[in-house]
Image (cartoon, rainbow over all chains, first blue to last red):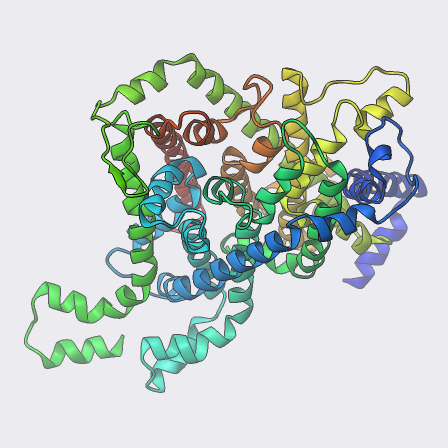
Length: 284
Length: 320
């Protein structure tokens, strides 16, 4: 294996090597530039942002950040986002874990219907449920309340988590189940005491994915959260760039504050995310 | 399964329903939470949506409670009128055409660029992990933040893209205010967002192709194109069929990019089906029935897609 690797590296001509690195550098620049520009812009004072000049650093200042943290509801919105996303992730995983296991291990009457249901609900466009759910929530007095938004998010995260966990449970060898059954465990006992502990990484990925879904959701949050005390970050940020005035300084500073922790966590777990999403496929 | 055998031998042949229940109650009990949640949270609103789509409900005639006063609903059943309106309207044709163009262009670019990057990364070289992290970055930033970033980059007056164009002697382009360039802009933003996922998924697929296959083909004198065509492409098929369909559904339903970058404008030029239905429901006089009907039309389109997906799965031997 390693010999093959060396051979390939040595066999590449210098010109090819340069071309390869130049292509990758160009691609990396395209990929990083918007984020880098965001960070640079957030450090500029307002009068510099609203000019057509393209300096990298001009009168760098942290004024935008102090204003975002001190004079806007940014921290409230961030807390709201965390509450809603955490609740969605925890409930989503709790509700869907046993189902993921059941459709991974058992063939039972109704199996196909359950699989179809999981698949189709994942594809539901936001437009189809938002009106009926909005009217329902309005009837229950849950508009502008966190539970209403969490319930709306569960409609998409529960089927998705079940689907994703099925993929993960499929990778856990069935021989473990059989060993448990031979030792006298019930099917649920097998799941709870043997499989679930092994599937912790899968659960974590599903939870994280639900968290991200809720964290970045725009449509429901915009429609349901009507008071600025209850906005999530996605709704709150739109307030900075309205129809008539755009506070690009506040927007960019807030974006940096959101993007940095999100990106850091994301880069740590992204390898597992991709595996989770394509689990069924790569196994085949 | 041993319990089943024992049970059947001991008891006199039980009725069909009893036997099914004793055999499968574990599976049913374990799927119950999701089935119940889905029926309550998705099934009921869906039925209600179907009902609303057959009425003329709007914000004005919907029942509501203002303080102490309960105002009853006054909307009426109108049958398939909403659907007839939609399917014969020029808006529908225009929105559907653009949604299909948007989906195809985005997915082709996602997969094409993603595959290219994955193949570049799938070889030994210096700085490989650094490139990998840098190229994944757009996926790591929440989509709504990215949409705002792009809105600033493409801003006509003080956006950096126009500033760069002007610096090299071109005039600025009103990216988000011209119908054609707005379409280019939303596609560019979405491609930027979506390539990393494709790249990582396809890279995983490439790494699962045994290296020996390529070496053997090389020894047999296959050209790079032949190796790509007859080893890489078939080897990637399990992964690529999944991610292409995931990507298609995601792009078709891509709400934040359109909604936050252009608001569907200018003049509805970049409005896809999903954002259009949303705006009908929540902007101006809220047209609940029309929006519900649009939602169902979109769902019907997606169910057709699901059929294709299932057929693809079946071909891979995952029969259900």
